[in-house]
Each structure stands twice: as C-alpha cells, then as structure tokens.
Length: 277
Picture 1 (cartoon, rainbow, N blue to C red):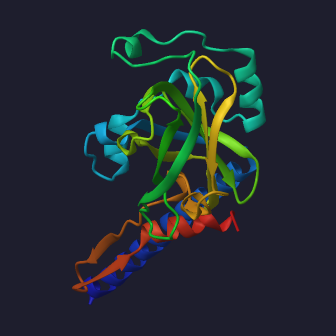
Picture 2 (cartoon, rainbow, N blue to C red):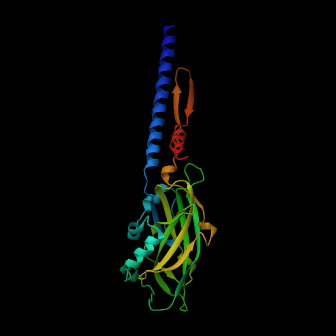
Picture 3 (tube, helix red, strand yellow):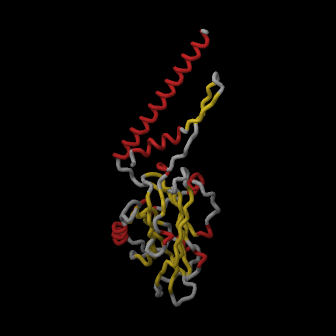
C-alpha cells in the first residue's frame, strides 16, 4: 500500500516538473522570438557561383553548400544595396584592367571590337526545404549570357549582379560573381549561382533579376529578370532560421509500461512563428 502511494506521488511530481519545464521552455522561445521581431535582422546569405559545366557535382544540402562557399570581394562590397545604389557605385569605381588570372587563360579578348550582349535564358531550381512548408532556404539560378558580334566565337570577360525582390519590393543585391569568360552564342558557358539563405528572409515570394557587366565598363550590358521568364518569378523562399527541423522527443513511464511521443520541435516552431503572424 505504501509503495502504491509513493508511486502515485512520484508520478505526479514527475508530470508536474515535466509540464513546468516544457511551459518554461515554450515561454522562453516565444519571448526570444518576439524580441527578434522587434529588431531589424540583416539579410544574410551564402552563395557560390561558377560556370555550370565546371562546377563539381554537389549534394543538394545546406551542409555541402557551406563547404563550397566562396564570397567574392564584389559581393562583400555591395551586398544588401539596392539596384540604384549599386549602379551608382559602379559608375564611381571602374575596374579598368583585366585580371591576370583570366589573361593567363589565353582568352581571345578584343575590347576594341564592336559587340553587344544578351542574356539568352535564365532558370531556377528550388533545392532544400527542411520543414516542408513549401518555402526553400536553398535555391539555384542559372543563366546563359551571349555575345552578339560579327566576329565568330568572340570572347569577353564579364561578371553578374544578382538581386532579389520580396513580393514586388525593391531589388536588393544578394550576390556578385567573380569574372568569367563567355564565348559568342555558345550554350556551354552557362553560369550557375547556388545560394543558402542563412537569416533575415521571411517566408515569402521572391523575384530574381540578373545584371550583366563587361569588365572594365560601368554600364549594364544586359539584364534578365522575372519580367522575361516565369522561372525567376515568385520563388517561394525563406532563410534557414525560419526553416526549423521538427524534433521528436520520447520519454518512457517505466512503472506504467507505456510510452508517449512529444513533438517538441513542432511546438517550438509553433511558438516561434506565433509572433510572426
């Protein structure tokens, strides 16, 4: 009889303690989430870009992507700026010489010849959505830039700025590529940028815009955006801080011989997102 009373008392104490701990945790998470919504969070992302055919085959996961990250100096200089601000900055500072690394590649480049540029096509790929809510933290953008010239297979050294527009808002730069070489209207020189949105991007629909520059000149030579293809229109994106993983926590009641599952991760996500509504 005494053992039975002791068991009930211990079981009640355990449940009370468990409930208090869970409630305290949820309140703490809610308070932290509320505090975060009151603070403007800088939009942060990591991107890697390169000629598509030269990119090493990658696993489509944030871990693999982070191992490949390489942030160009251009991205560090202009990231987070509006398109107008970037255009003005480019006018003020022009790279008037070709990088040695590209000259060493025996590029058939003639800055004095007449040519114009065109971004022939652009595409996107949604890669990773951990919580499966339809908004992705990893995505890729691929585009094919061409040279329109009377000279066959003419080459030029270019770079690209990539922008995101949240639900029709202003264009904000999220990546500037390193210099790369394009050849005439060759389809084998597609450029790919794979991005991991790390923080500051709420779940929403984002358009993509690409500006192409020729190295040594400050004017945009070609533009391609959601106005040209639906592939760059209304991409469902969110940063990884809004893409939480669900974690199941199990505890056993040894005396009662039963077990229960608590979707602790789900509750955390609900508490976290409550203040975003």
